[in-house]
Image (tube, rainbow, N blue to C red; front, side):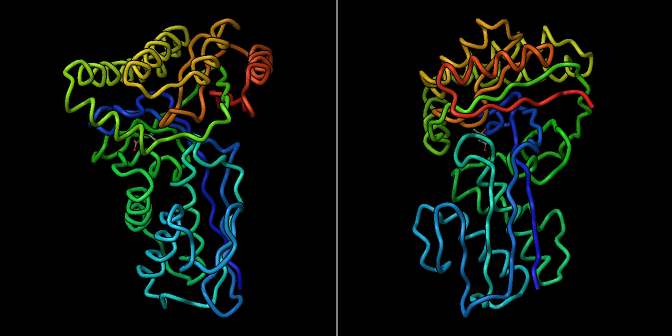
Length: 308
Ligand code: MEV
């Protein structure tokens, strides 16, 4: 018997970091990258294999605690034995720790696969509890935007602790995603922003300004105004720089996007490494920009159409 669970990556279009403080974020599932968990009856104990580990779940190194927790907590919620003779195989095309939601996505995929293996229904609330508790280990104080986006199929307008609003995205434009190749430092970035938020009035203003930009972005998404959308993305990157969550490589890729005539560009996700996104008008521009990003140090690029 085998069971499979999947989850997609995610891209935050607007609102990262500010979303932790009750401001809105706009995020989209990014189906170009995906995690697949396969559970099978195998061996004599609970084992897991993925790119970075192959062995007993209870011996997993501390840095993978959030994955271990997702497996154990799912088993607990299912009412299964805590150390069953099963194997969890994880295959991923989501680059780890690059702001694409890999930690949330792996928890979503694992929970789905384990519930399917034990033939138990997995309610949205149950999935949410499992993923958020695993995200708390990975990120400290997660807003929930990663959990909501990687478990869904639609772009969302997300405010912490509120019902999320699905968004219809039908823009005749493209997003180019560039991976800086540097592992993101979401936990540190979130903690440093929290210190700034506590100690500096300006930082609280920047967070609020990010929220205003996200609300504007929502309007531009529905009116199809890609120029204005690009502008608010640029302004958001400036504010994220002020908050100290960008870095030289991300800034270089964002500048490259500007030189190539992108309508807007910004980092996406936790920052301090990870990925950036740029908005362009057509496929030809997207191809040229993707090449320019790779020439300037991006280790991987993707192109996502924002229409239907
Ligand atoms: C991480 O993908 C997004 C952050 O806003 C953290 C969070 O919302 O939990 C940086």
